[in-house]
Image 1 (cartoon, rainbow, N blue to C red):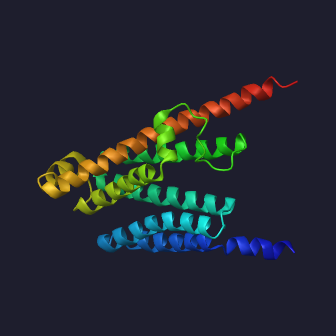
Image 2: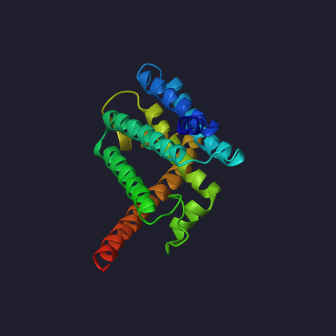
Image 3: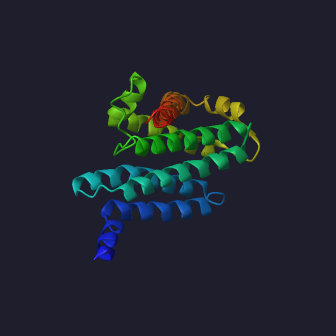
Length: 221
């Protein structure tokens, strides 16, 4: 009897959307060097589907731990792959590799500490004392803006690069000569900066929870 129940969870609508996202991203990164525009479109569609699967999960009561993990793993791997590409296109590449490390470490700490303290979702930060952290996870529109700004900024940088070993500052300065792109970059960089600040706060908060768990565990009789 357990096999049909497992199969039904795997076939939840939001999880099927998750599988489509994985396949879409695989194809997108496969053609990223030969067709940058198509890659950018597919990557962005996959990102939009990230919001859709959450809506379907709530709409049809198909929220699942597997779906949440699939969703986060897909997000993190997609962003990580794009940051690796940017690290090869731009100099200094260490900037993008550092962002990759922060992104993965922050979400890993957050997910682990979530299950450690018995919370259902890693977005449950009601007990946090940090206003920015609570505002980020407490307001879907605000969080959506920050996430979209971050991903679109990375896509924009990818499209702006004409060759490998581009100087990041020079490319950004050249792009600012266009008023439209200049305004767009400012809007994107504000959201990007907030998201990086949240990542740092998230990692520190989650690390504190892990340490508190260790201390409480040692003092138990």
